[in-house]
Amino acid sequence: MLAKPHRITRGADYRATVRRGARFTAANTITHVRLNRDSDVVRFGFIVSKAVGNAVVRNRVRRRLKAAAYEVLPRLESAAVNGPGLDIVIRALPASAQVRWATLHEEVSGAADRFLSRHTTSSRETRRSVTTEGNVRP
Image 1 (cartoon, rainbow, N blue to C red):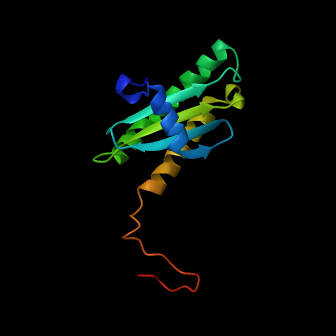
Image 2: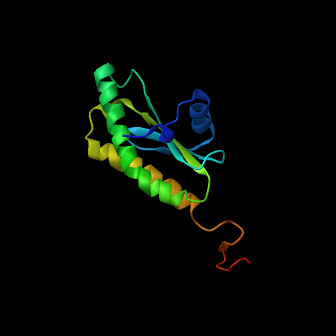
Image 3: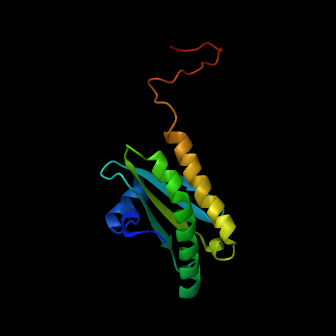
């Protein structure tokens, strides 16, 4: 599973990620991702409320999300090399109790891919944009 350095443990870090992070919504999860300039490691946090089910169901959903995060971790670490770390908070929706692990894995992986595609492209200064007339702006 996830080692201690890869887990969000403080409530302030959860709040900061949920409030200031990019939000990616899927059918069974909501994922918040934030660049953490204070760290150089990728960290995960999980929120599974009582609306998901009883304690047995909530723990099963949390274990599945942790396993999905563990598989996505190497790809995120390679993208975060020599840069700021990432804080990722995954909130399980009530429907997540009935879905297969593969579906949860696809949602976690998809949110990570969408975030990386946004933040690993060239910077705004070096990127050229196209106007509505088709002319290229310098």
